[in-house]
Image (cartoon, rainbow, N blue to C red; front, side, top):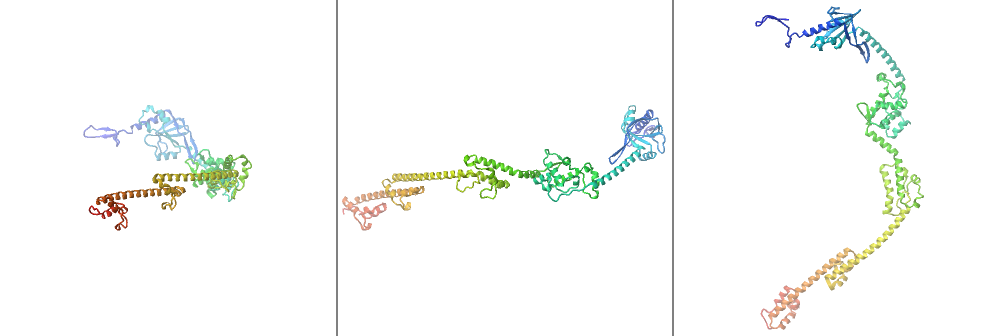
Length: 572
């Protein structure tokens, strides 16, 4: 309580206030504390927690959890240098009980309890501070959290743990020495082995992925390359994508290759065996180390739970190697079917003496290899050979010739028939060609003659037969007979002839008109018609010895003649 002596209210006592303004903060805790001691004193029964001690995975039970009844209880009585909440007595045995409401037992009190070497527990009542006291009796005695602060039996339990630890250490040391003495390391072989799995792996092109150095290889009774090949091939051929390290070890165990002396060795023992430099490992870790090397080489991928998967690179290498091994047989079947199909179209009498197996083993004509040898060729060279075989029939059909490469197949009769057929076809084509040439020649001559007659009339035949400069001094009809180009030349010459004829006609028309006009004018200048006619027909020196009628061919020459007429009408 705190005395209150102010100037406003009467003097009085008040409960002590906390910093946060709450008063009597410890009142509930004190009541709970007292109630707990009281209920224990009344009922003399309490649930004791279990207690155990452990060291490096080993465990020793000190006491089991149980509910125990005591003879009597002593409350708040000094025991040695401490005052326990409750001291429970059972015959000659004592148990200290501490109740925690806000604070645990402090270190000083705990140390004194340990010095007393008396059993002590602490019951945590912090969660019951706001509960009704008459409702939590059983909770205090049986259910509230509780721990051992000290138990005299713990020391003996720890001693037993230490004894067992020493025994295990001694036993482990014996095991280490035993395994170290028994272990004989296996290094990779210098040469090729003859093991079944090693041979398969090498045939699959996996030489660089086996016979790898790995610690613990002596745990297996077969060569390094052989057991590694078995693990690798099992992983590659796994039906599921989940291949674990233990699956690899099981492969070796099932084949009897796992040395029974090391079959059950732990990783801890294996680690101690290695401490003197021995290249040792447990079998499972040996397999794992090998798989790790494969992963570094790009052959595997690992998952989070030691799941291994073959990489695409590895699967592709195996596929290519196996395809390469199977290729000769596959190619042999391919050629057998191909040849059978090719020869099926030939007459039976030409193929009955052909033996495929003999042809298959014999060198092809002009070559230093047989079809059987060719099965080992590269893909490109093999495809070239197949193309040559399949092209034989095509060449015989479209390009038959003597000396055609038949690759030793019975196509001679077919080739001779094709050559004869081709010769007959060529002769027939030549005859047809000549007939066509003659027909074309006659057609060109007829077309030229018809056009010449149409355009030149009676002069056509003479023009057709007469050599012409426009047709290289050959007659137009001969040029047209030679070719279509010659016909075109003759047509151009004809067109030129037609233009010449038109020009002559026009010149004659111009002369007639000019002469008629001059004669009319002459008559107008002479009174005598006879005189005018005489003037027209008389030769004159001025006109080069020609008469006006002869000299006049156009308006220009007519005008020169007009200049010679009398200026006035004359009788002379």
